[in-house]
Image (tube, rainbow, N blue to C red; front, side, top):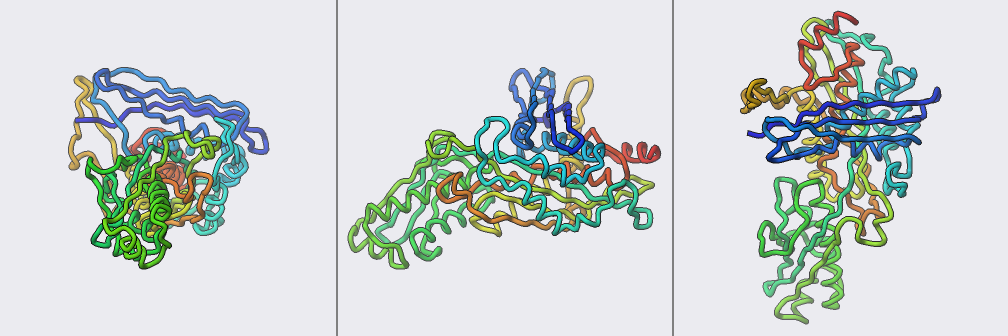
Length: 440
């Protein structure tokens, strides 16, 4: 039985009187198993999120005789942004500044870590669009100011960022002797809509109807794809497919249109194939000079019962900038799932270990809690659909795990705004809230 990695994070900010960051420090201590070492990169996103002249991130590991952990759901960014964005909320309070204003003030168009220009940087726009749509103007800055009976109401915000990875990918496109268009890749569709998206891309480039396109996936005999994890499946595979389609057009000399396959067979009765490939991260001269990320902003409203400490998440809004959106329906589904995971991580999930032997005590879904339908609030998602043509030729970036980045922090910031209790150990427990609410 594997267990969730344990982290102890320390975040420090320095700022001048106007709110401009003068120092950023993010350190993390992560336990690791001797037999299967794993280090969660909790500080990686911090390096590119806000600008500051003085920055430091460090990761430390300690080896324990406990089950090992591994990557799942925005590894690094989810726990890292939980700490960083909660700390930004505390800084905003210390400065008596609106949390959104503080974040926008410290936005940047240059990657603080590498010094490279950032492509498609729309963090401030996500925050501003979200503030308007969520009704941030109605937020009361002091905790415990808004009540509905026994419930304390609060709003929270957090920024989202995730690197856009480019992995080596190959895709084959073919016109078969039967007059069908075939897309071929060993990529797997794990419920993310890859079949739909790849059929769309091929149909759009070749000018044919989507129902004339067959997508063949998950076969090791097919060209090697970039994989389905890490939010890179759709962006990398679609980019390589785009190149393959143009290679097929060039090699056959046939104009795009509804009769593309029939015209190809008129010239090549045996059919025709072409392969498109995408080189690995940083290997394309036109792209490696710039830093590529996806961005977002999370807004959450919660109700906290002032007697029992019960937390109810009432509504969530996520505004995201991930380049061109290939399919709004599948992208929304991915982001909705990511936001749900973020809520789950901060309010529900907690691995309990036997202090004597290190075994996981709650190794099933009866005791390791995840949200059910009754726990999920009204979730609204806005996508700023604008191609990032500096990221790749079709302007697409990964979207799935972006929904998990920052959503947990928005929840805990909303809890503080509701009841005045800062939480620093997760998941949030009723006992912690009740004990501390009596002191506020």
